[in-house]
Image (cartoon, rainbow over all chains, first blue to last red; front, side):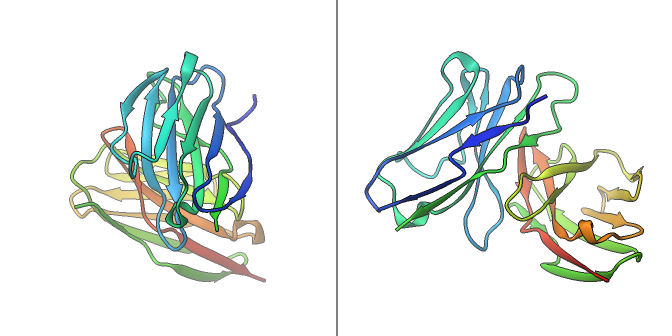
Length: 115
Length: 108
């Protein structure tokens, strides 16, 4: 069974540019989460999808961040325009609906560097 | 507020036992998780405690006391491959709140 995959693994962009991160959850997992770790800090929650619906987006930093999950399969997280403080590692995680949904499976993350 | 504390770094010897502590103060509680993360890799699930007590799984055990807001992860018979970051996280209304992680270095 394939795990959670994220693309790209690394991205280096200049301030003001746009970047789109992609996450493919484990097949059949309805729950999809985005988390972020900025240097020196803890991993923080960004948002939660249940299928294609945003269940909780309370962790999104501002309106420069847009997450989508059209069709309830893969998800994208777009940052536009990127700022220096957006640098960090962006993790995606997924879990099934129902019993066992408390255990999250994480991807390896996308290391984003904004210069 | 939400606060999860764990030591930043620990060092232990191969074959020994090490205990990584985690204290938490959160507005809600639906369980406590421990994840292991090797550099550049995905965090991987180690344990989940929702009730007080000890959960044992092979060389790893995790303990929870909800009244004290306290958990620990116990690693026995340490191996070099156990060198990694160990993340304590509390589940609160569906999302995980993480501590900063404890970097464990296992020495020969």
